[in-house]
Image (cartoon, rainbow, N blue to C red; front, side, top):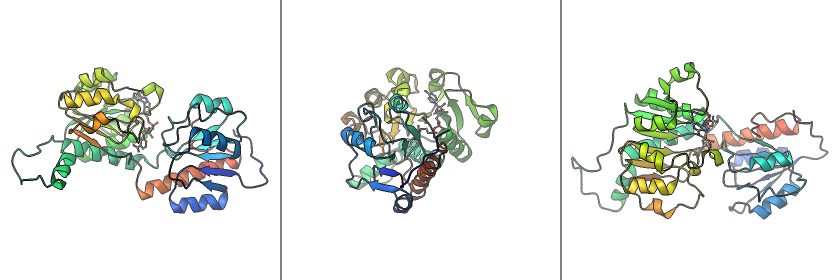
Length: 330
Ligand SMILES: NC(=O)c1ccc[n+]([C@@H]2O[C@H](COP(=O)([O-])OP(=O)(O)OC[C@H]3O[C@@H](n4cnc5c(N)ncnc54)[C@H](O)[C@@H]3O)[C@@H](O)[C@H]2O)c1
């Protein structure tokens, strides 16, 4: 339980990026809010300075709150209310050392992120990116029986790595919408009634699941524990015509191993919404034709971005009224 926070004035809150206007207005009304209007993320030095001045900071995935940015003594900041569900950009050891609470925004973005994973799966299997590039370049010569022939999605086997909120939303779409057979790899055992909802089967190990899949979609968290979970050895375990979809975090895939696998046709193709070290894109990826790339659009709908903001607001109110934030993760 968080100790009641008794403050004579409104808590001082820093918003690190632009947010939907409606949520910014509500934040400004309830808190003494400062907005970063520069359109560039804060540096580590700016974060250290902010940690001395603000009661709460509202970061996003673009804010690298690693050990360097959190290398402060006795910070004023008591809460990092993250705008997003993934929080592997925040150094868990450092926040624990400082006794800083961290919250996130689960659930409200699961459907839209699963929609983007489905979009990517369809785009790469049906060669939609290649087709659009060809058409815009004025290179389309007309319908031909063998032109840009892709792979069928319906009825195929989808392996889901990480069967949490978004993994299950993906299974819902793929199984009930596309008649796909669902295999699951999760850190802990998934209850049978949850698997049954999606006609899914949990496979004991990732290595055992990969050779059985036509599509593999990643929905686990990032961070050190899952860094390069998909490496060259595991890409070799995939079928030569299988597709890899990553809407989780860039570091989960060894991108250089992926580029090699794509160039030498060890797998059929890949589709990425997230990148290791984004927004920098490893140049080797840009040379891969059988790769679809989106600029981290998973939660990017008007409805979801507002809902994420409202969820952060709920967590702030919880905390400053003396309760644990409802979405406390650290
Ligand atoms: N592309 C985007 O815009 C976007 C949007 C939202 C979330 N995400 C990413 O999606 C992730 C999942 O979100 P969620 O809300 O579904 O989280 P969640 O906590 O509900 O589910 C994650 C699941 O992954 C499992 N897991 C962890 N490590 C694993 C491993 N090595 N192998 C197999 N399973 C593993 C966990 O047991 C858990 O069931 C987030 O952490 C975030 O990084 C991306």
